[in-house]
Image (cartoon, rainbow, N blue to C red):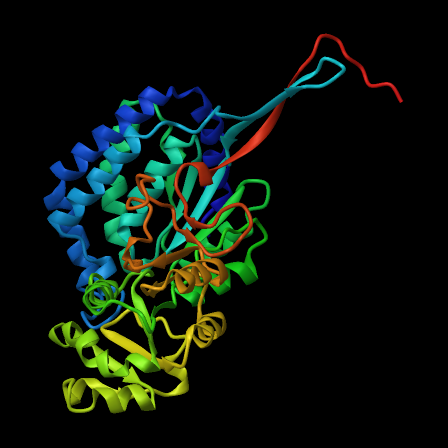
Amino acid sequence: MTDYTAYFAATQQASRALAAVAPATTDALLRALADATVAQTDFILAENAKDLAQMPATDPRHDRLRLTPERLQAIAQDLRNVAGLPSPLGAVLSEKTLPNGLHLSKVRVPLGVVGIIYEARPNVTVDSLALCLKTGNACLLKGGSDAAASNAALLAVAGPVLAAHGVPPAAVTLLPAERAATEALLGAVGYVDVVIPRGSQGLIDYVRQTARVPVIETGAGVVHTYFDQSGDLTNGRAIVANAKTRRVSVCNALDCLLMNEQRLSDLPALVAPLAEARVQLFADGPAYAALLGCYPHELLHTATAEHFGTEFLDYKLAIKSVPNLDAALDHIARHGSRHSEAIISENQIAIDTFLRVVDAAAVYANASTAFTDGAQFGLGAEIGISTQKLHARGPMGLEELTSYKWLVRGQGQVRLG
């Protein structure tokens, strides 16, 4: 039986050692790791191919699992981006001197030991390493068995780089891919400060229901775009196509187009680019009628109730016709996952209402939801996209991986009474 406590204790000890690592050393480490990742492209891709061979290409997770030279270059660039950001550690959030002379300052500090549970997403291995080390956190990585070879390869590249910069190897620990490791991590009270799940709604629900340690949820993305009565058709075509087809397997991809009934005659033109990508449409009655004969017949289907509120992670899109903005807002409130939502409109009142009322981590006006991403938001990378409201919301970058503590400086004060 694997002794997970030994893993956890070593990582906890490493988290304390990280306090002695200078920020400049961490930045140099991340840049060196970026170079090493690119230099080891052939090795990493060969290991990634072993994982890909075990997963059908039709599996929605296949695209997330797949690494390419271009994606490794992007991973390396994210490492460099994180290295170039200022460290949040030690930043003074507020300070004051009390009437009794005590000086109080509230400063950013690491969370401590961060557990990350994720599925077939090897890029998360590197993103987690970079963001955790930059914020002085040790991390326990629990990747899925589908990406076991890929994750191990990325850590094999990272190991010598960490050692060369004086960082304890246990500061970044890849747990065994077996399910028992997940159960142990979720119960590691006293060793793990927070667990962050990244993956399917099923994984997130399991972590939330099982964990005995604090959890920050990075929820699934059931994403809507509402095309308003005043929406610009040219902008709308580009936004809808990008949000749906840029990468269908990511959580910010579009799942449901809400179409104002007064613009149904424009629906065929709005979704025309989707036909080129062979996107299957599941349309309600009015939308189906508007598309019949104008969209490839084999790709056009009648929507059923289960199509609304579904995160497809595939070349599939639900379409719902709505009479007005209020109906669109009601639909989003009922079926959304509080991830990313968008409106396409030229009516400023409608835009302002949508931005104010929609309850989501990222709310857009006249832009693609594909931008919900830590790197795109200027955070360097992300540990996940939080859909909850406590501690962090939206793409979680460096600041979201910190807490704070109060520093109290005195000159012999004692409390009376």
